[in-house]
Image (cartoon, rainbow over all chains, first blue to last red):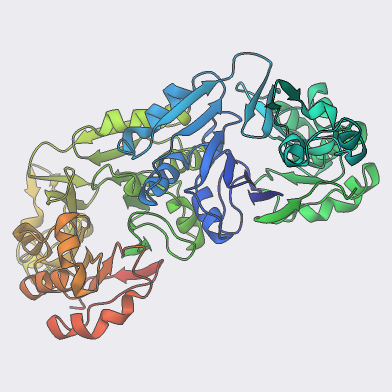
Length: 303
Length: 303
């Protein structure tokens, strides 16, 4: 239903065996890319996903490792003959930064629209998805993103029959449409039960552990969080550079209780992130230290 | 003596198995990088060469595939604690383009100096190397580069003895120094024979075949030249996009007679560049269709 791919797991600089951290989500023919570092377009090609369908790009912040791949990605989308407008969302300064980078990619066959994030939290709709950008704490203004897909209540055949709703309207009502015929208005609420649990993904990197992260990731189906350092001796460094350790990320999970967690944005100095597995597992069991290109399909619960 | 590495062989966009075209030369503790596309810093790391020692960056032109990796490369050099100034050379607009890209890499621990190329041809010294930038014919102003290392004449022991030059000065005179003692001046020309054949590398990509390329590559030890398309049916496309075919590159070699030739900047649509080997070999034998990361050490002839 929602396909998620963590294109890379690196921070700071791309490495021969580790792309920079970026996330792609596909839903209903549309794609969303969060961050675009140097090499992200190659990582995308490696997993066989298309750049052409990216309709929304969200940026956490404007450090090079999160946006340096943008000119190349835009040109590749242009070469694939994309013509539909592309929406970009990011902290203030977005249009200025993107236009600066476009000094080497001035001609594109599609329009770019900009949405600069106004405050500490901003929620907007993108098709059926609801996206919340929330400010975190890094050296530069930086946002995390929560993507939610809501799920309508269950359709009640009994209630539809009781209210003599014509059979021909059931499908449209079930899909949220309001219908009118012969002066009578039929609304979805007449036949749908309470909203059911939908899907919820929270992505957050380049930040100290601040309370709003656990709030955003509360009960998420998938929480993707930075864990730049694994070694306890790096705690001070993490604080200084406004990043966090894997242990700090795990303690956010203790509060948020997400279903699944992927750590990312590993320091280039950390060659084997998995070696800290036991330690973080002791704090919050089941956290995954993924490889580049990890893919998951998220679906509504059976019921 | 001069180590050369063709970091990538691709054009237009980086691919999972093909980095963008860029060349690095190492001589006497200094490094020169020509072009820096998305992923060039990863290619450099793959061959185990260091970004920190890059003292000179030359740009052919400002299409993204030749400069998009610059912000990341600069940050990586900064992270390696480079503090020496870096010289950049390229077509007019260099400072503006580089400063635009530096919107995502504003803080560096070293100074950048700019040399914008003034005309059709410009020769300058860089340490012991002599570099010539020569204008070629692309959609944007574009230059090729020739790098030469001159070789002094042979030291004549007989002439040194005949002229009663003190033994203690021989070494300095041999290395080109002029020495004075007791009112007598000793010059290198007193003991050195005629200049001998040095080393000569010509690099040229993103251009139609114009006469100055063969002039520059004349008798080169290594000529690196674009050959974007191999299929004869692409000749018109090559002309339209201001590139050239492998066959056109081979015909330049017929005129220039370089010792060794590497083709590069292959179109992403050309999956197996080697399939055109026989055809280009028939025009100029021995042309190499290299893989990414091809390395060669160039040395003075024995004598």
